[in-house]
Amino acid sequence: MQRRHLLKALSLVAVSTAFFTSAGAHADGKVVKVGTIGGPDAQIWQVVQKVAKRDGLDVKIVEFNDYVQPNAALDAGDLDANSFQHQPYLDSQIKQRGYKLVNAGLTYISPLGVYSKKLKSLKDLPEGARIAVPNDPSNENRALLLLQSQGVIKLKAGAGTNGSNATPLDVAGNPKKIKLVELDAAQLPRTLADVDAAAINTNFALAAGLQPGKDAIALEDVHSPYANLIAVRAKDKDQPWVKKLVAAYQSEDVRQFLKTEFKGSMVPSF
Picture 1 (cartoon, helix red, strand yellow):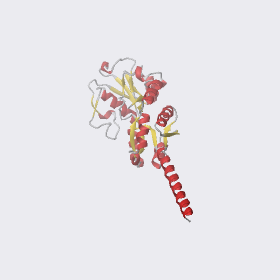
Picture 2 (cartoon, rainbow, N blue to C red):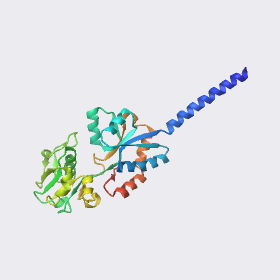
Picture 3 (cartoon, rainbow, N blue to C red):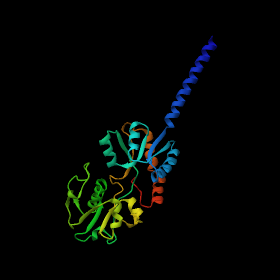
Picture 4 (cartoon, helix red, strand yellow):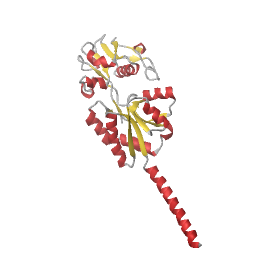
């Protein structure tokens, strides 16, 4: 009788130990699903994946081919994090769709730059100079904020940073009376012979044989609002795995990979 009770007690201990060991292993060995866009972002996350593994974090990369699904999947709980967007885009998605997502840490910026075939510096702009800027709201806003940061123009208070995009109508100060020429972003590299300068997105600059780190006469700051980020659900932002994930991205391994692989087209923002 006593033997039977002893065996039963030992069995319960064994089951309990197995349960807690299993639960503990799951907690410590969480598989973090990160959504990103295929191409360079996926390449970067393969490096992050290796760094995270060294810290005991298992990262699974989930690739998407559009900019809508990653936030929807994260908000629904199908992902643990995503990495493909900047703060203004995340803010617009939260406003439109009610997502409860937050910025967990910055990654890199593909800097919008000012390029010129006529000038070595924006300080050399002649009076009445023509500067071409993208005509889509988001990138025009970036261009105007960049020109303001360089002292070329001054925008009305709050313009471009208060949740709405600045336009040429928001220019309050223009000491050199420059003329802003609004054009399709993809066409801007081809206009360099016809204008004094042009504000060009990195992808279009690269396609035209321009190197941001070498050829631009002005670049967005690495801590610009348009730096990309890692997003997580608001309820998860203080979880230990989030800190590990961000630390893995913001590691020296990733910094060096960005610098050597992308040569100024994707600049670390950490």
